[in-house]
Length: 253
Length: 253
DNA sequence: GAGTGGTCTAGACCACAAA
DNA sequence: TTGTGGTCTAGACCACTCC
Image 1 (cartoon, each protein chain N blue to C red):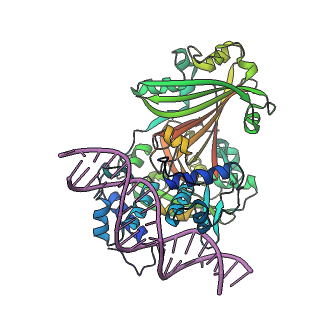
Image 2: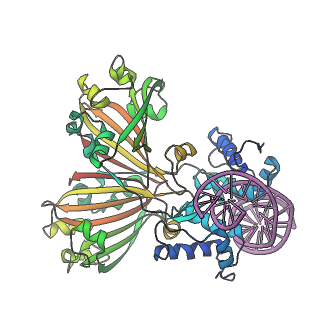
Image 3: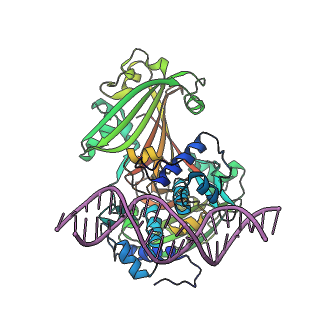
């Protein structure tokens, strides 16, 4: 089953064979693969070599291992589609922040916990918010859950001047969230920008988001600007890539 | 150096220690880590355990291994920022497609190779283009390079009826690309949509894009719609996540 | 208790890079 | 030639799951 003369490492040959059986449907999503000991028998290689092969498939996100149970073909995830319309004033008027509005539309039971703190702006924050490095910013650290599962992390930062003495410094900002409070204070939001990237999660993110091996995170930095172009808020979001898709639309020209 | 009573696996403790030394700056970007044999000495664990630790850091994209040379702290990459303005008619008028316009603005020497073929629409394609599954589509398969390096893969699909007998079925579509040809044929583009996700690369993508271990890819499916709402083209793009950031902007409301 | 994956050892030999 | 990472073996014991 493994060609030792081909120059291709044995564990890669085993991984390629298993991958082929998965894409061909021989092992369907949710199916259990043969146990590592059975694969040792089948391919006539040692167990560490089998484990190298399985680990490769895990790092590709093709399979997931469950201790004491087996290795399973990763089932496709429910994809949350986030469209930019989630930021409309209409949604805010219905007493929902961006996340709650999205979840409610999908039949999820959303919840979120917030911590508020104050810190000095580092270089990156200063650049996005166009303030001096070291200036005080209000930081709202949020963990968002759907049906109890953590699905999103978000860190929102605003210049402290904009929030002092307002509900934006409280855990509960009230109906419509921070954006609604900003507009009440006369800071009318003119436009948004989102900067989207992806990377592998840190160990903290892996445990917080309960990510399987081989799952990247999507990073979104959203900046809200006042109608005169002044940055009001920046929001660093981290989303599990296997559960989210972002959609953007715009008119030609 | 490793606490065997803590319950935390040795290779994770080693990885955490090395990761800490990297974020603290003790090992700076580009620096070589001690060799695996040296780490064996230092941590008093076996070489496979050291390799497990290093492999964890590789899968996190923190370090890259170079055969025969050593393991190095991954240096930060040049980030290409793609803004939606890359699709403006103004750019097309200057004889540039989306990719070439972007690269030229950055001082890169861009090149791209294209293969054209025709195939039957699968379910996903049919849904995006709102055509019957099995209907014939023109497929333009592109590999884009900057300074010789592959930086982007793109597969563009259009209903065959829109391209029959036009330069869109040729390798060279002429000035302004496929979008310009569509508009000349009376298909004025009304709006665009982009659907953004991320995942781990397939082995083929890893070699084509020369991705290091622990580098995800960003996937973008762009759909161009005619002013009456009919889908004209869909474009599946695959970008190395360590070299790209996407930006979107829109007015509030 | 039996079966599963998770961790770890102490070697061996190979392929690649640089002096 | 020496040192590097890459592959592979043949075990061992542990932790978790399920019967």
